Length: 156
Image (cartoon, rainbow, N blue to C red; front, side):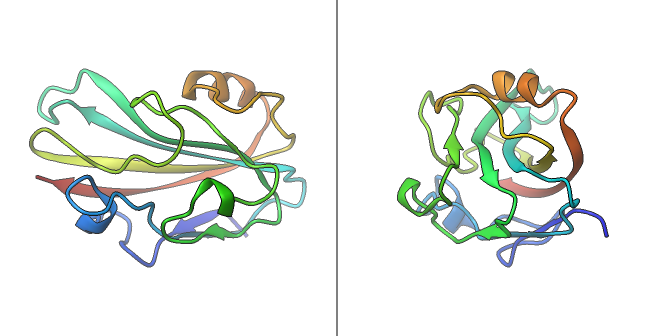
């Protein structure tokens, strides 16, 4: 069985509904996953836009959401998940708005792809809450058992 990530709000390469963007209510979309390797001890979820600021001339990867130390038995997140609703032990990292939590698509122009990447890890990361994407990725090195991703698109 391989790790799979999905959403009932949009499919892989599908358009992210405006409800989940800055043009709507900026809610986190519902996500679910299956196929965790047996040795999984925690999960990490990173959501990034590699097309920022312009998909025709990308200059940066904008970080929208950083979650880590999701418990291995967690199989998804509900729509509009709040800090209080996150599974026990889950830590939130800082996004590029310099805050924790989900920040939805808000491209200045063009169609952007938003990469939702889920990694199954053989350890819980020894990081305090508020870590950056770079810190999470560095801590994950050598501990990724499996990963999967899905891409949603949004155009303003």
